[in-house]
Amino acid sequence: MRTCSEHKMQVSVTDNTPKLHEFPESIIDEIFNKLENAKYIATARCVCKCFNEASKRIRSVRFICLDKYHESIRYGLRLSSPKISQSSPSARAQASRGKQVVTQAINSDVEGLDSGGKHEPSTSTTGGTQIQHLERKPSVDRIEGDSHSISKGESSTAVAETTQSFSSDEEGSSSDDERPVFIFRNVVERFLEKQKLVQLRLEIEGKLQSKYVSEAERRRTDFWLSDPMHLTRWVPNVKDTLQHLCIVDYGQQAIMRRSSILEILSKNCKKLKTLDLRNMFIDSSGLEDMPALTSITLRCVKVTGDTLQLINARMRNLVILALSGVFGVVEGTLDIPSLKVLCLGLSTVAKDISMNLPSLSKLQLKMLCPEKLTISATTLQFLAFNLEVGENAVIEFDDLRDLQELLYGASSFDTLTKLVAMNPSLNKLFLDIPCMTLGGDGKWLGVLPGVPLFLPNFKQLLLCERLGVLNIGPGLWHSMEVNLETMLAVKNWPSFKRLILHMIPGNLDACTAILRTLLKPTLTSLELYIHTSSPVSYDAIVSQVSGITSNFDRSFSFKPLILRGPALASCSNGG
Image: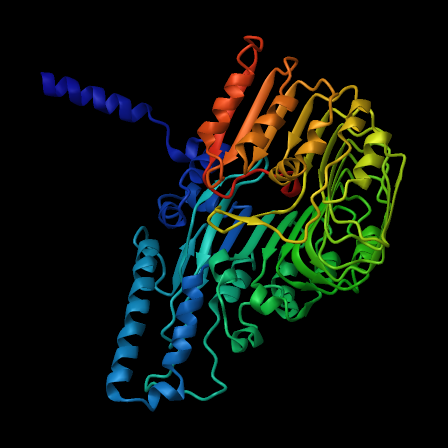
C-alpha cells in the first residue's frame, strides 16, 4: 500500500508538471541565458525544439582571441617551415610531439562541445550557430564561453573564445608562400552570416597585445580585425540590426596600417548607437553621417589629422565622446548641441582645439596641451584638468561659471587661479602635482626629476564659500612638505567639512605640522590614504592624527587606510 501510494503521488506530480514547450518564450530565453557556458549551450540546444529556437535568438556575442591561439598558429608555421624539414630526425620528432600536444589540447575542448547532442560530424555548434570544420587539413575549431542577459529586449550574450587553426602538409615541408588557415576571422564571418545581432564585441586578449613580437610579426595581417576586406565580409550582414559594436584590434599589426572602418560602418550600419574602437589606425576620409550614434570611444589609436573635425560634422547626435591616447589630431572644432560628456586625451600636440558645447556637463582634459584651446560650456559642472600648459599656449574659458567639481593635476597653478575666480560656487576640489612614480607592482619609486614643486594660492580658496570637499593628492602633499614654511604661513582656510589626503609621507615633523594646519574642529570627516612604501610609517601618521583630533566632536569620522598596491589615488589620474 505504501509503495502504491508513493507511486500514485509521483504520477500525480508528473502529470501536473508543465512541459517546456508550454512556457512563455521569455521564460525559455531566461533559462537559456542562465546556462552561461557555450559548451552547455551547445548541449542544451539539442534538448528540445524550444531550446534550439532560443539559441537562435541570441542578440549579443563576444569573441576573444587568446594568446595561446596565436602561439599555436605560429608554432604550426615553424613546424611546416623548411628549417624544420631539413633538421635532424630528433628535431623533427620533437616538433611533431609538440604539435600533437597542441592538437590534443584543442581537441579536448572540442569534445566538450560535441558531447551533449546529436550534431553533424562536420560541425561544431554553439549558441545556435554552426561552424563548418575545414576538411583535409589538421585544423580544429573551438568556441566556448558564457552567456548572460544584457538588457531588456535583447537576448543572451555568448562569450566566444576561438582557436586558430594551423596547417602543414603531411610530409612536413612547405613553400615560402604557404600560410596557415586563419580561423578566427573565418569564424567571425561565418557566425555573422545569419545572426541578427544587436551587440557585438571582437577583441584580442590583453596578454597577446602586450608581449614583445618580432618585426616579421608586425608585417603580417592575419590578426588584423579592422582589415577593410575582413570588415566588408561581415558588416553588411548585420547592418539592419547592429546597435552596439566594440573592436579591440591587435595593435602590433593594426597600428601599422590604415583602416577605413569608419567609412564602412557609416555606410552600412545606420542603426549603430555606440561604437568603441581600440588599437588601430583609422583613416576618417569617406566618413558618412551617423545620425543614430550617441556614443563613440577611440582608445590607443592613430587617426588622420581631420578626424575630430569629421566626427563633429558627421556625428551630430553624440552624447558621449571619449578620446584616450589618440595620435594625429591636428585641429578641430566641436559644437555638437547634444554632447554631455567629453574626454579629450590627445597624445600629440594639436594646433587649435575649440569647443562650444551648450549641453556639456562633464569634461576631462588629460592630454598634451594644444597650442590654442578654447572652451565655452555654460552648463559644465565637472572639469578634470590634467595637462601642462606650455609657455606659448593660449587657453581661453568662456562662460564657465557653474562648476561644482574641479579636478586639477598640473605643476603650474595659473589656470587653477582663473578657474577658482570664475567659479565661487565650487563644492568639490581635487588638487595634485603629477610628480610621483610607482612601479608596476605599486612600489613607490621616487619623485620625478624636473617637475616644478609649487603650491597653489590656498588663500584664494576662501572665495569658494560652498567648498565642502578638499582632496589633496600625493604629489601636492610632497610639495607641501618641501615648501613647509610657505604652507604654514597660510592661516585662513575655507570651512570645508570633508578632507581627503593621499600621501607618501617623507618627514614626520613636516607631516605633523601640515596636519595641525589642515585639521580644524569644523571637519566632520577625514579620509587618509598612506602608501605602504612611504618613508614614514602608517602607524606614526595615524598616531599624530589621533592626537590632533582627540578633542573633535564625537560625530567626527576618521578613516585611515594603508595602500599596498598601485591603487594610490591621485588627482592627476582621476582618483
